[in-house]
Image 1: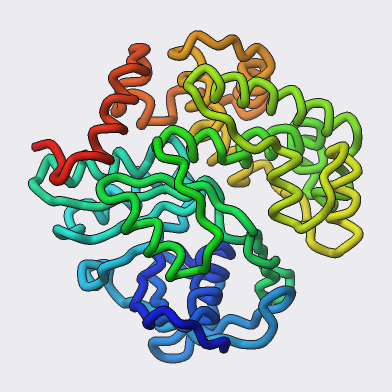
Image 2: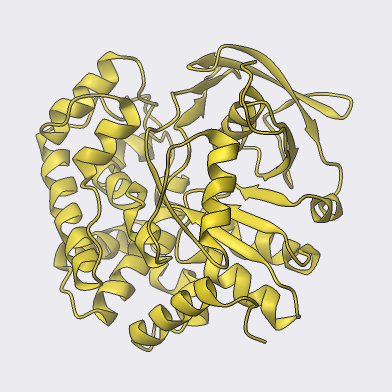
Length: 368
């Protein structure tokens, strides 16, 4: 493993899916001591109290990460990184809520629906001063291969983030963990809108729903045709319009792909073809029951729609995508995001929400 000037830190990673495992492996590469906790960790090869992860791609070789046997052990870590899908927030983070302690920093990787603000305010209600942060995206993209190996791509060059409490300290912490790639967006709403997964995944899966339904083996970026590109560009325009109404200037989807996959920016379908040609693209979902919809529809698309509505921005294409997915899945995704109500966004309280985001960042102690 490479040596680094920062001191080694003990870091707990919650979630043992591909992103959680890749994050832990990169932390190890950066000289830290990662520990994994997951309610299942079903895909991991276990050796006693260790998880053995065979890596390929940008991470090559086997790594061993210590597994935490009980969630109560998370209270012993100053830094915890949450690598969970949005549809696991209520169950898993709800279970962990009583365990957080004063002074801990909890970072939500690829944060959706203002989860860091929810974590902080929920901790504050029981008198706990929790420092919470959100990364707009995951440090890398990764997926498990059919043989069980973890394919991880290189770390992204830029990750927008925001935090509650001392933003400078948490920015420095993130840099110590994974290098100088983090940009403080200031307002917690910015990384929420900078997370492009919800719109990208909607554009990718809606034209390919029958492939998912039939369980076909299909390449996600190999099927990213101009049709997908036009849908993605339209959704991106609405995302950026919402951000602009709130005073944010965010990277475009094309800029995000360029930074994430280290390719030249251009038309989205051409960028996707380049990603596929380099072997960096995952397979498309082979089932309807997949996080690209079950996570990103309620906790990404629905939250963006509510935020846009509260900001007075029309998002007809975004709303149409939610309508299509609700019809296909026979589910009310708009009702599944509990954070829209808990954060007061359903009542159109964007001004109050922004005030709470600002207060959480500037206050020395959380509101009681």
